[in-house]
Length: 265
Image 1 (cartoon, one colour):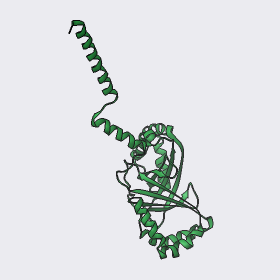
Image 2 (cartoon, rainbow, N blue to C red; image 1 turned 180 degrees about the vertical axis):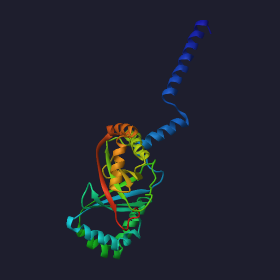
Image 3 (cartoon, rainbow, N blue to C red; image 1 turned 135 degrees about the horizontal axis):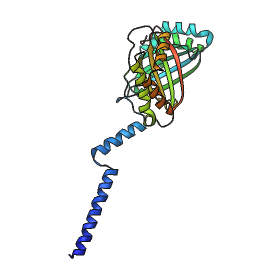
Image 4 (tube, rainbow, N blue to C red; image 1 turned 180 degrees about the horizontal axis):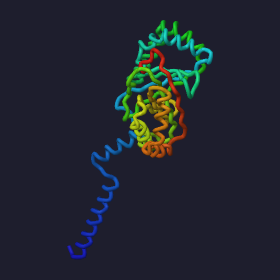
């Protein structure tokens, strides 16, 4: 091999080495690439707890003159329903919406829900004593399926009594991959003020997508109002909220009162 051929071969080898290094830098192989890809896919499809558990959120509009009658029936007959699956909580609206009830049910997976719905359809006590009498009192029904976000466990209030706040955030399309970190920072900023207790953060899977429901507990409406006033003067809260509202399309909150049969009171 001549000196010229040697120089050409060396340059070609250097070029191959440089190209290989650029490819590895831009498209890293190995387990790290697979882990990063898996993480990105999880975010794009909506991260959730590492199990099949989900929550069905049911909202009923009750005829205005029939709310008292409906709640009396719930108190009297709802044990037939809770015999079939786990009730997380049951509330009626006090502020922010009128003549509404909201209840949340926990299921292990979709097969579990199917089995429960089949059993309820064949439960003569449930159908005969509650459903047949309650349906004429209901104007509209709506349900959603949601998962707890992975950084939140379902909590409980420090004591019975108090009120709940159900806050619904309609986020921009794109899912948690787009707005997840900013949203979490805003929630944590409110938690860190200490004025309120976080119960759960739910991200919808069925229903209107890119929707997040946050359930808070407060000792009273006045205690919540005072806490919110202080939070709005907290620089950390203000900064986190300003960052998250870039991804927000709309927001609504409802003050909820738990009924007697609600596990969350």
